[in-house]
Image (cartoon, rainbow, N blue to C red):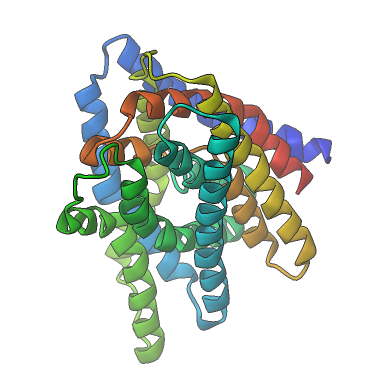
Length: 320
């Protein structure tokens, strides 16, 4: 392990979670209501994240980066399939009582923007590296968003006899961040073909979005964590299963892949490991609330795994 890398990662995580703590305390002290957190999250998802992802994909995309986009999509699918398969096996082996679909979703769908983005911005030194990291994170979004709002929703459903409205699933899957990531690539491809450039005003707006996204994302994440309440749905075996798979097994597999493929762009390898080692996605809770699922178990698991990830994530980034 490189001690300097570990110290840098711990410092970055501490700074980021300190901002999240403001959101947590704001809700606990009544300065920000749960509805206020929801409104901030809507603004983040509808405006700031799309602006950041569009900017990253537009500024960084070039035909030679196509293979990395494909690799990011394939890696995200591998994370999902691998985590779900391991969760189903562990659920049976450990005789976990909680719904197997919920455990599988939590084990296979990572926080792919809210945490990786601010950590990458805090750890990577140069603007060029930060821009490449944003592009690769956006590439992961291209696979993550459809997976969460399709197969993920089906896994989270408590009642298998109740259908899932396809139109509603598509509406959530085709959300602003996903559309912005795709649009950024398409617009850049057209601009390269015809020699067009981005207007200065648009560039300024997109830069503003990028600067505001990181602190706003952490405030929202902290506010979400503040809503956690202990309940009878808590099960040690379920949380242990998710923690081992999501915070240990999947990042170990990603690290082995990175080391085996020494020719990878180091920034892509960094983002891949960062995505692999991140705790479960907070949007799993939103999907469960929208379509039905064990929201209390999900909230408790998120809270515990995020606390543990303050140690595990820097460790993985230090040994890469």
